[in-house]
Image (cartoon, rainbow, N blue to C red; front, top):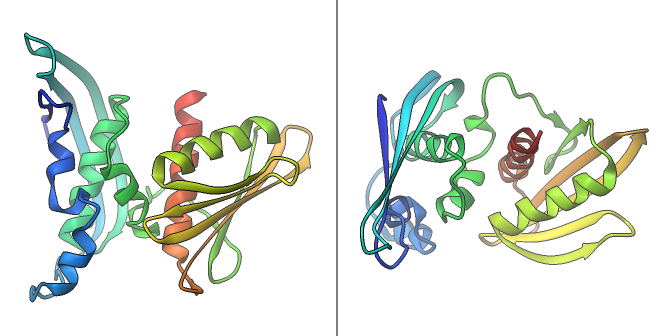
Length: 217
């Protein structure tokens, strides 16, 4: 893609949040739909995006910004048109530093299949993934809390035990941190919905935390 257009209307609504996949009640509507599952599958996606154009119509006169992102990333195992669209939209916005959209939370639930080729998460059980991160435990706790709050609703937080529980679109996601050495923290993220493991959601949440970590470094 040479250009990705992002528009904000006079009420502050983003055009990407009007997409069906970004709406909070889209899951219930999809269940009632008679449309068959997507037959689209991409083993390897090489995504290139030149620029992101942002048009904000909230002021009296439109505010136009252009971000030369020159994004080049590869993704593996895209399993449907919805997931492909989520990758293109969220990665365009992320590269431009644009946040606060509902669609980020939906992207986190698209699962491990949308992770970049270079990202490998350690699987620990049916519902959890783990990563050792070069960051002090206090700072990583705050960063993880911020990301999970953006993706869903924080339900519990225990700073003494370095544990966070959030609800992300009906799924209970728990992040636990443990110091493994000076300046290195082990982050484990688990996800369950109705007591059933949701490994793909845990992977998505951990990936979002890693992306935020890269953005602040």
